[in-house]
Length: 442
Ligand code: SAH
Ligand code: SF4
Ligand code: F3S
Image (tube, rainbow, N blue to C red; front, side, top):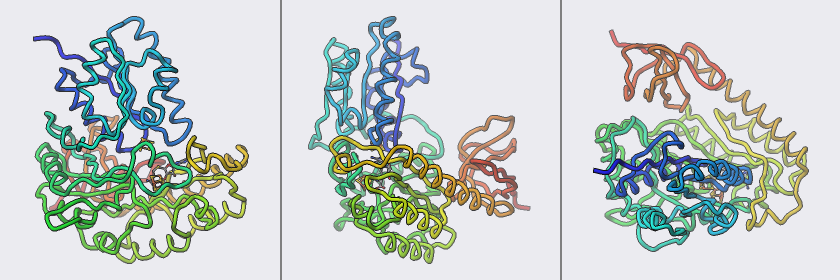
């Protein structure tokens, strides 16, 4: 028997890329590959890339530059670029870095075995099509290994919203939802392999409208179907768009016990003028009213968001409106970014905000978010949380997991195993995590 070939995948960007990297590993297992954590051992290195901001894309080229030495030492080493940079730049990648053997876009991962074989034959392989066949179905038929207690499951991909700053509609394509039965099959399979928490993924996950037995189902209906799977304890979903928060989904947050009280609901800006220019099709006020309805259904829900500062033509007054919105919402967590012009998107052509102005705004916004995040975390001290433990921590007998609110929680307890779901008394709040003690009955 020949020794297995080693595959090293480095994943950038969003959770969907994490999911895709797992699928690529499975797809290449049929070609005799096993995953490795060391790029020096690898027979193939794949970069699963992100194109969302300029820095993310540039990182790929500098990373590729670093593989030159490795490739010189090991001529048989194959280097591939997958993900959103692959989709956006295609052949250009091979022009800029001629040692790249393979470029594959997110819609073509099921064709990886064939593309890999072409690289072994000494050819360059490029596939950035949006093929008609269902890649998920082809990918599903691959062998799968046992796994940890949490998993991602892509249910929807792509986006039709075309926010003026965003590359996703171009790199991931038009919005597509997977059929309900396929998702349920995949979820049951994950649970059989030890998964207790599933995060449903989609660039616009709450726009989900997959085919069910009696017509299309909403995300809330899909969640209720998943709720029926024994052994599945927790359900999450991300990322949602404010305009797709339907009544049934809001209601599910109040009534579905497996649906965790955490919602990532990006708003991007608190200024209506900027929101309009961003083509967001919601206002600051409609967002705030939506938050009120969500909190009415689930008062303890932890809210998370995304913000862009320094969007073209953003004034200090616009920025203040964003700060006011953040004050009004009180986030438990948020991601914030300086606007990065992306070639081919409408906003890239508009008058840009000066770099130092954008940096200053980002700093002020992040300081406010950090204060809110700390306040939400500190308020957990003395309360009970339910923690799903995922892995050992850095210290002896330390285990780390996530609370229902997605806070990282660590305990020192020799009897806790990965996969245990425990009631924990929160005893301390640190910069990015909570400390606690497992409560045992009796
Ligand atoms: N589908 C999600 C977000 C996907 S991208 C949504 O609709 O909100 C993740 C985040 O990256 C976005 O929410 C936005 O805050 C940020 N982002 C996207 N394009 C950007 C750009 N050109 N510059 C800076 N941040 C950007
Ligand atoms: Fe990008 Fe999200 Fe807007 Fe779609 S809804 S264009 S993914 S920011
Ligand atoms: Fe990045 Fe593509 Fe995800 S651009 S954020 S990897 S959808």
